[in-house]
Structure formats: C-alpha cells, structure tokens
Image (cartoon, rainbow, N blue to C red; front, top):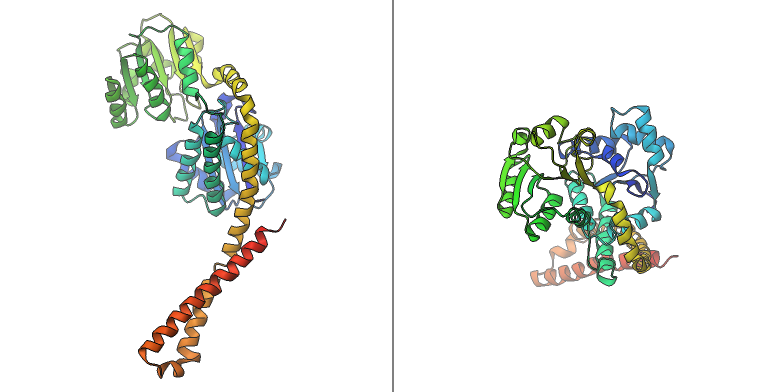
Length: 408
C-alpha cells in the first residue's frame, strides 16, 4: 500500500478558479498523461477531474517530496514557468499509503465533496478509472483500490443518511437561479450537452421552463438534448453568429480556454442592456472574467456556491461519524485484500511449474510404464493426476494466504 500516492487540489485547499489550471482536454489526455507517467517513473496513474477537484493517483515507489513534485508539475505542463510550478508545489495536498486510501474513500463517499451527500462523485471516480484504464495507464493496485472505493461509496450511501434528500452542485445552482425569480418564458442558451448541463436542463424542464437553444461541439449531441427540451440545436462554432437573444446562459464544457469570449458575448447580447444570468459550472470557467467588468451579469459559478454548500454540510454533519467508521473498517479489510493479492501474484507461477512436472513425469520419467497400460487405466491415472494437480496448487496457496492475512 505504500506505493499508493495521491496529489490533490480540492475546494478545501485551493481556490476553485485555480483548479482549472489542471484541466486536461480529452484530445490531449492520452499524450499528456502518458508523458507524465513516464517522466516520474510511475507504475500506474489515474487522473480525476471534477468541478471542484483535480486528483492524480499514482503507484510509485518514490517519496512525494519537493524534488518529486517539481519534476511532476514540470512534466504536467512543459510550458509552465518556475512561478507556476512553485505555486503548484505549495498548494498540492499529498496523501501516501493508508492516508491516500482513506482520502479516496472519503472522496467517493462525498464527505470530502463541496456538496456533502452528492452521489455524482462515485460515478465520476468510476468514469475516471475506466478512461485511464482504457488508455493503459492503470494496473493492479489502482484497479483494486478503485473497486473497493466504489464498494465503500455504495455502503456509505446505503447505510447512512449522508445522501438523504440528495443535493448536488447542479441543484445548488438551480436553487440560486430560482431565488432570482426568473420568468418561465426566459430564453436559455445551453452551451455544452454533457452530464452537468443535461442534469441542469432536466431541472429547468421539470419546473416548466421551455425556451431552449443548445450549442455543442458535436451537433448530434446538441440535437439529442434539444429534442428532449423541445428546443433548437446548433454547433458550437455558430455561437458567435447567434442573434436570437437570451436571458440566461447555462454553460459547462470541457474546454481548456474560455468558450464565451468578450467578443462572442458582445455579439450575443447585441443592444440588449438588461441584466443577464450566467450559470457557469465549468472548470476552468467558460465565461471570460473580463465580461463581468463590462456587462451587468449575475454569475452563478461553482466558487460562489460554497456558502450554500456549507449550510448543506451542517445539516449532514451528524452522519459524518457513521461514514468514517465505514471507511476505517474498509481500510482494514483492504489491507487484507492486498496481502491476499500479494500471495496470488507471488504464487502465480506455481500452476505452470506443477503442469511442467506432470508433463515430464508422464512423457519422460514414467513413459515406459505408461506405454504398457490400457486406455481405461490411463484415463483413471489421468483423473488422479488432475485431482492431485489442483490440490497441489490450491492447498499451499490457501495456507499461504491464511498465514499472511492473519499476521498483524
């Protein structure tokens, strides 16, 4: 377990706007993570990015000290200056070994989330693993850790009230929107058709909003969401030319740079001087900050949802202890899983060796004796050898597991 390390940037330690510095676009994910993994000699690497955290999970023998972190962040973005690298080193939260596992279990259980009790995080953890596994970045240790993490998250949600009357970043954003007394005929521009915007759109549709225009890089995905909302769909490339007007923008894309630039916003708003609402749940933000200096905008973003999230935490605080007990129990169980897995890996050559001994015995040592046996006798002997072969493999492996897992 000592090889398991996490380098994290979360809403608890880092300004949410700064977390966007660690966003990697899907197009660059494979090349950048492969380079990063190779540069720090990591055996495994998993990258988790959400609206309020970015975490790097590694299997690596080196200690995560200042020298390692400098090499890590220099490799994460080769264009970064010393100032950016030093800032990252100072703001990184590092977890190692058992503490890393405890942190990961807490993340998946949502007790480390901006919105305690939100269930989306368990799906985000699973999706991050599947994506990195497909890219060939993960291995046995992270596989076992994530498998157990998903189980822990489910156990917490099932056996505690931490997720009772569930909330999420999306629901908090919608709550702030409704507090503005928005009219039901308000014109919505939805930019991006991923999970976050789709969930927001469902809230809006449920509460009888009906005027939607959807933009997305892939027109087909925009059309799917627009069809569900009975709205219109356009490719994102046509956003700057849109002249239909709007009252509210809901945006959440995976872009590394601002999608709504000052020039695009100026084109969208035209001569309309009324106050607009922008719900920007992207990290980094889709709305260029300069727009706020020049236009009357009521911005609802992840960083200004934190006060509402604190109220949610207070309401669920009494459940935290029950969650922590589940987490601690699973840490102890995972230690036994790792010990058992260590035995399996160490003894993985045993079946091969036993089969080799059997082949030598039958084809060389006792070949003459076997040649004089009839077919029925050979069949009986073969069954006996197969039975003994299985026992020679399973019995010592079970004994080794029992000995190792019972050690304190």
